[in-house]
Image 1 (cartoon, rainbow, N blue to C red):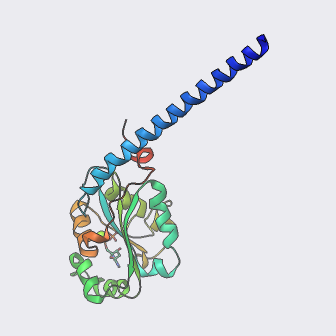
Image 2 (cartoon, helix red, strand yellow):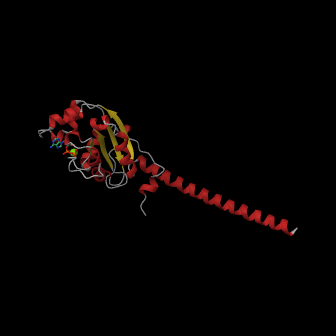
Image 3 (tube, protein in one colour):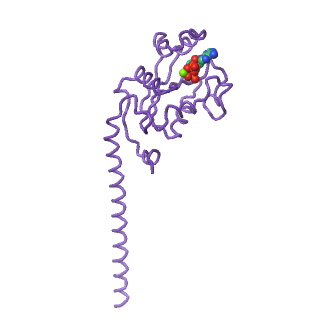
Length: 206
Ligand code: DAT
Ligand code: MG
């Protein structure tokens, strides 16, 4: 008799414990959902060119025709993705000569301009918008110096190319160029304001 009472007691204890754990689990998921729904509201208000200085800073990154032809799309995307940046826009297209001239308009007086435009419009480019804290400046650091012979190992240009005229990737160099380039390449509806379930693990401040 005493043994069965004890057994019932243990069962009741285990049951209470399980219920408590379930409550804790529900509480955790409730909090997670709350976080996500707050983010949904925030994401909905982000302008196409992002909000510089915040977790919604955005930059324009393009894999040039040599990078695409050399099969480096996945390698390049993975460096931005692994860092923690969020892909909010991507498409592949071959720029026309006119469009290439527009993209590089600030370099039109440079002697290498005609060759640059020819190269940039010679094949498909993977155009992207990446989002995250420090995306513009950190994006430039991930890419490395313009001349691959001067780019540090560990950077994309430092690891994957050797010639300035075939330096495989473009990245906006400041807040103004990021805004200009994102708007030049992407319509607002081509950029996705989305919540990544990992966002709190990557972007939340303490
Ligand atoms: P970045 O691409 O690092 O922003 P940039 O804006 O000064 O560099 O120049 C744009 C591109 O023009 C660059 O990626 C490669 C080409 N370029 C720059 N300087 C060059 C040079 N001296 N000779 C040949 N191509 C050059
Ligand atoms: Mg530049």
